[in-house]
Structures are given as C-alpha cells and as structure tokens.
Length: 191
Image (cartoon, rainbow, N blue to C red; front, side):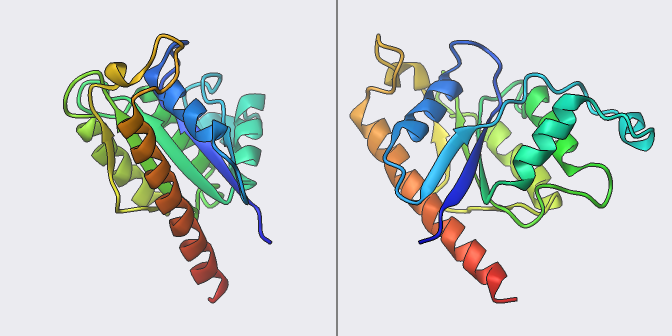
C-alpha cells in the first residue's frame, strides 16, 4: 500500500490563526495512507535571487526546499489580505520554485482552503493563489472549492473546529483531495 506525504502550507503567522486551526483539524483526522503535516514558512526571508546566484541560500530555504521535494502533494490553507494572498504565502511559493530550473513544486497535486471572518471566505486569495500554482506546475483540485466564511463562528471555546457542518465539509473536502492525489500520481506514473 502506498503512503502519501501531504504538506500543509498555512498562509498566516498569527498564533491563534483560524487557518492554523483548520490545518490542525485536518492533521488530527485518521491518516490511513495519507500523512499530513504542516510545513513551516514563517522563517523564510523574502526571496532574493542573489542568495541562489552566489550559492549562499539561507538554511531555511534549504530546509524548506527539501521538505517540499519530499512531498507527494500540497494543501494550502490561507486567509485573505487586501483581496489577495498573504505575502508570507507568496514568498513560500517563490522560494520553492527557485532557483530557475529546480522548481520543487513541479507536478504535485494541490488544493486550497481559504477562510475569513467575513462572509466571502477569502474568495480573492483562493483565486490569486491558483494563478501562482498553475505557473509553478502544481495541479490544483478544481472541485470542490473551499471558501470558509464566518470562520470564527466555527471555532469553539477550546480553539478547535466545533461546528458540525464545517467538520463535515472539511472531511468531504479532505476525501476529495485524497482521490485527486491518487488520480494525479497514477496519471503521472503512466507517462
């Protein structure tokens, strides 16, 4: 039986981030053959090509690129800042795609969950990140889409996802993503 390593990239650095709570919920679910874990991005300096050109990438770049290379798939969980992707998330995508010709994201299945305390569920961020993912050759799952609006109402006093319909949706999304991963990995294997 194959085991798939799934990295979760959270686009928020805030300690009590709603998106970190969503990631924790996903990681706490029964694993079967899918191992989910959060990949740290808060320690990545802003991408600067000089680091790579001079052969002196920061240790955090080296660590991050190795972690991404070892993944079978990537799940992005993000808030929306000013109708777009948080800078820390875009920076992580850039770091993983460089140096030129050594894109660590290449060919991996991916999915996006966006959330917001507002009603729109970070729709803008969700679609902006899709543009970058397509360019770095991640295969983003098209359906179901995941926009979690009013996310603060889904979190209980214990800091965990408590609203049952949100739990049910996240579980169905996770199952669809796992089917997507298998589909993409097996399609790639037939080349």
